[in-house]
Image (cartoon, rainbow, N blue to C red; front, side, top):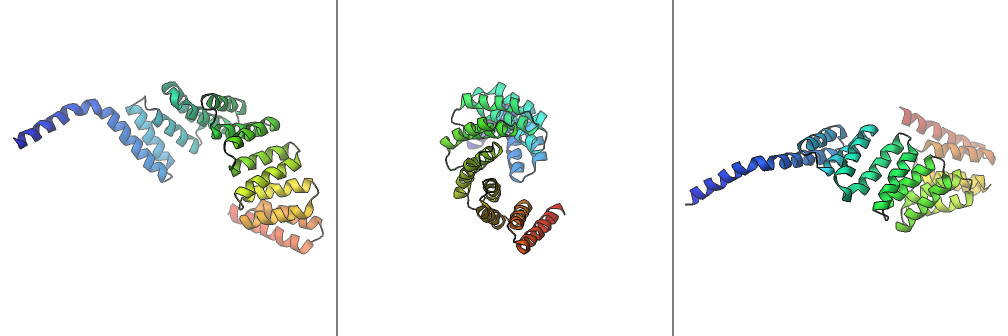
Length: 266
């Protein structure tokens, strides 16, 4: 009896397989794409996700993953098409697709459209920290510094220990000429991430605008300690040291700026 039972089960599996093959194939391509993404091979991963969408055009996860890889490949217009597919297929996942679409739009300089996309994400998921932060960056890039600060404040309400958001808030204040507020924001960033070289560097610039020269030297110095290859921080340190008459130290800093810039260029 047992051999016959096995034969029957096998026959059932063969008969059933055509109805399952489409979803199975889509999931196989998805799995391959995920593995390729983990390797950093976005080109091949995108092909795998594309195949997944061809096997199952309703796979919103495949469309979303394809869109993200197209962003990684710099194919922003194509990624927008993929995210639009997600939005039309699965409303419950639309907040993520709107956020991702916003990133693609911002990457090609369409900041107003990006802000609309982020607002759509926020309407669906008001506590989406990423969307608030990305909206702030788009507003900052478009020159709307005060509105960008409001967006960063909202993001920080939701995630107070987001060093990157404190950093961008600092940049917004700096560009708006609010130097004390800028220093405070960069303080928030380096308090969370003491080796945040970019935050130290721009903190130094904000301090220079407040004529707090010795503190700015300390900030630039901290930036170079956090990232010895930060040529901009070395150059800023050299300029500040030169301004206070520490010429030999300035020359040493400029040498480091030249060396690190040359290393990056080679």
